[in-house]
Image (cartoon, rainbow, N blue to C red):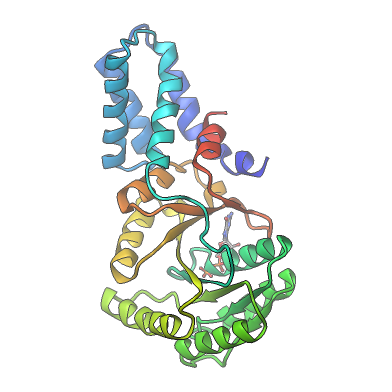
Amino acid sequence: NRLKNGLSKTRKGITEKVDIILKSYKKIDEELFEDLEEVLITADVGVNTTMDIIQELREKVKERKISEVSEIRGLLKEVLREVLTKGETNKLNIDPSPAIIMVVGVNGVGKTTTIGKLSSRLKSEGKKVLIAAGDTFRAAAIEQLQEWGNRAGVDIISHQEGADPAAVIYDGIQAAKARKIDVLICDTAGRLHNKKNLMNELSKIFRVVEREYPDARKEILLVVDATTGQNAVSQAKVFKEACDITGIVLTKLDGTAKGGVVLAVQSELDVPVKLVGVGEKISDLQDFDPISFVEAIFE
Ligand code: GDP
């Protein structure tokens, strides 16, 4: 199973350590909680989220009068599941069509790859997909997207390098309507000079979307790189202030033992993780399902 393979490093980083700790304790005491806390923080679950998780664990132990160390593993799984399922749904809001997915994020996080993988996935599910190359700042970005489009068998609407991104999105929307496209996926520029600049760029695009495609379902997906750990969380905070992110895509989960960042991003931003990247291949993009995620790291 792909998710399981993609999370093998995280499984080592969290579960193996948890199991070693649990074996070394005969009874449940404060020191045990502190050791578990350290494992979660090391796995990039984030300090606040970790504190909440451990506190919840303490309370459950007390409430249920649990005394066996062996029961902690199951209890921890239960708490993690609760943390990951308490917010909004993790499912992409694209049905029924038409839908438009705006993909935002800084360069290098895996935006292009994610668009390629997602368009291929949706197409294989029988949807009509179109890509708009809204990152006009780099010629290479347009070319790369074109390559992914070719691989996925999905058409691309693009302009010259330097063109107005909002004009590309406008053309994308007109084409999507004319061709009865189910899902239009829009790339956006990945430059992050400062928040004001980012807001200006994005808000111009969003205005076009609101005006030209009012009936479409809208997703604004922020792509962040899981290997950057807590930086991914702070990046997400900046974007959340600049636009109404509806979901997060966490890429490169296969490359890190710190997959705990899923918990940090989701609970500290209160925005659901919707997709995870678990490799470089076109098929290495998964819907994020909290239950399978917890199962995969604890197996
Ligand atoms: P962009 O600048 O945000 O568009 O980033 P790209 O899509 O070009 O990706 C940057 C690098 O990250 C490329 O080498 C991708 O192959 C790699 N990448 C993207 N997603 C994943 C993933 O889920 N796992 C791994 N291992 N690599 C990824």
